Length: 90
Ligand SMILES: [Zn+2]
Image 1 (tube, rainbow, N blue to C red):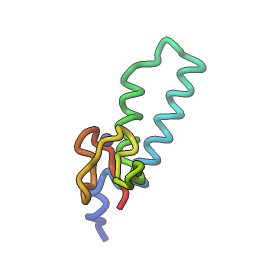
Image 2: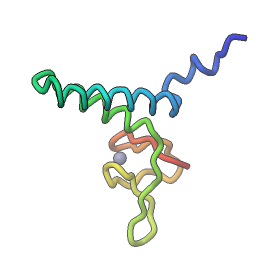
Image 3: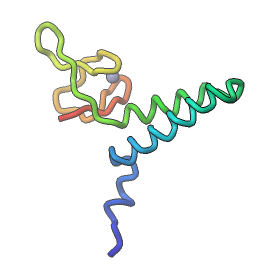
C-alpha cells in the first residue's frame, strides 16, 4: 500500500537525522581531503537540518522555557521557535 504519510512528512525527524549525518560526513571529508571545497553553504545546510530536529527547552533561573538554540522565549505551545526556527520538543 502507498504510504501517504511518508510523502507528506519529508522532514520527519528520523530522515532529518539521516540527512544531517550524511551532510556532516561530507563536510568532515571535505575538511580533511578537499579543504578548498568547503563552502559556507555546507554549514548552512547542517544548521538548517539541526533546527529540524526537536530539541528540549532550556529553562532560565525563573523556570521559563527558552529556545535551546537562540535563547529566545517562545510562546508556550510553539512547535518552532519564532525567532530562529528551531524545532522544539513537547
Ligand atoms: Zn530560537
